[in-house]
Structures are given as C-alpha cells and as structure tokens.
Image (cartoon, rainbow, N blue to C red; front, top):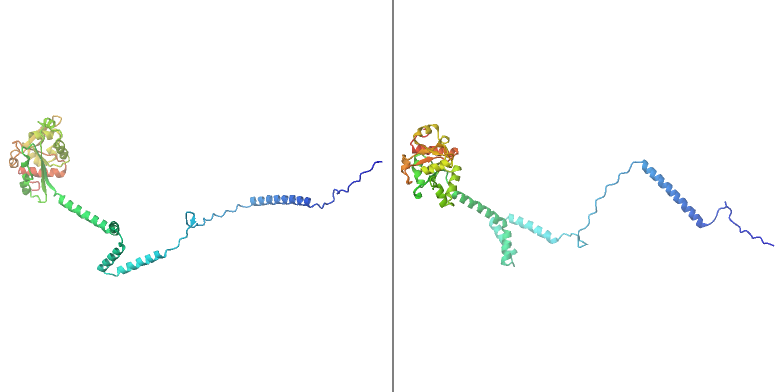
Length: 331
C-alpha cells in the first residue's frame, strides 16, 4: 500500500510575504524608477527655460610671498623708519644753516662716514659723493675749451683767393702781393687774402707726372679750383693751356660784366680746350703794374677765372678793375 506524500504548506500566489530581503529589493527598484522620472522631468524643465548665465570667475586669492617654499611675511624694519626720519631732520636742519655752516656740517658728516675706510674705498666714496659736480664741471670745461679753440682757429673771411702757377721761386709769392689791392679797394681789415703756388704746365705735364706721380698738386689744385676755392689764377702760357685743356678755367663771359668784357677785348688770351677748339679763356696782364711787381720768373703773365659762384666772380671782377685801373661798378 502506497503512502501519499504530504504536501508542505506553500504561499498562495496572491498572499503577501513578510520576507525583509525581498522587501528591500522591491524598494530599491521603486526608488530607481522615481529618480529616473525626476531627472527626466528636471531635464525637460531646464530645456523649456532660458539658460542661466554663469557667474564670472573670481580673481585668485593673493598668496603670501615665499622664499624656498617658506612663507615670508613683510614686517617693517623700525631702523628704516628711523633713518628716514633722521634724513628729513638733517635736511630741515641744513636748510636753516648758512652756507659756511652747511659746508662744515656736510664735511663733518662725510668724515664720519669715511671712518675706517682705506684709501681705495675713500676714493670710490668721494667719486660717488661728488659725481654730479664732477660731471657738470667736465661738461662746462669741455665747452669752454671748445669755444677757445673755435675762436683761436677761426679765420677771417676771404676777400680774394688766388693760385699762382709755375713761378720760379715760391717763397716770393705771399699774401703781401695783394696788400696794395686791399688798401685801394678799401676792403675791411678783418678780411684776408689767400695765395697758393703750383707747378702745372701743359707742355711738361706728362713728364712731370712720370717723374713724380705721387705729387699731390696734380689732384689738389683741380679739386679746389672746381670747388670755386680760387677766385683767380695767375699763370704763364703753359699754365693757361693746362687750365683750358682740363676745363678748369671758365669763359670770361660767365664771370665779368658787359662793360668789362668790352674794355678788355685788346687783352684777350685764347687757348684750346680738350677737343682742340680755341676760345677766350683769360687775359694778358703782362703790361700791368701788378704783374710787373711780381717775381714769377716769366714775362708773359695771364689771368683766368676758375670760380663759378657769384661771390667768387664778384671778387674776380673787383680785382680785374684794380689791375687794369678801371672804375668800379658803383662809381
């Protein structure tokens, strides 16, 4: 006879349970659903409203100074304050003193500060102490020296500048040859005359250059003449040919006035230029008293004009009127 197994009493399907673990799991699931719903609602609410502007970032909080990673707080030094107060008091005290008393007080203070210094330290201290007086003194002294040199080296203005070519004895040709001209022309004594001698002859030019190619006269005279340094050139025939061939001499038509050109026609001196064409480049002054008074070593004396400036041409015209004894333009 078979025995029937007894059924254990079970939990009906709809009967609530009292298991606490199961209750906790159910509660957690419900809480997650509620949180998801809440976040969805919050997102929907944020999307429907305008974005709230963010606040600007706050400036960083100032950090205390550090040295080697350790915080260093500044604490005023009482000695510094005492020194400032002492300095102000000294200035006020010096302001109430007379000049001599102020000097004595400064000297005493300086001597006190230099106590215990060696010679080198004393020199450095004094240079630092008197640096501005020394600088100002040097500047003023330099300006005074410059003014003295400028006055002593400055030369009076030139009334006539001449070049003499191919004379036999240069020592005889000095500024004194124009002394009578300066007096007769009534030129102020503050003016001066200049005269220089050169040896430049077209007939012997190549030979002279071959014998002494380093002679500075070959370059000095042409350079100065083209810069209108000379108002007139006194020369022989070889020098006149050199001036015309190198185009140093200017046509008298560009230098002298019409009345002078007409008066000097009998004395015209022709010469050839670099292209072999003949033009009037100067005048023969051999018969004038001025030319006869010169010791040039040649009898035929000519004058030509290298200056192109109005001042140089004025000087040349005044001198031509003097040697040919012609009236001045204003007379």
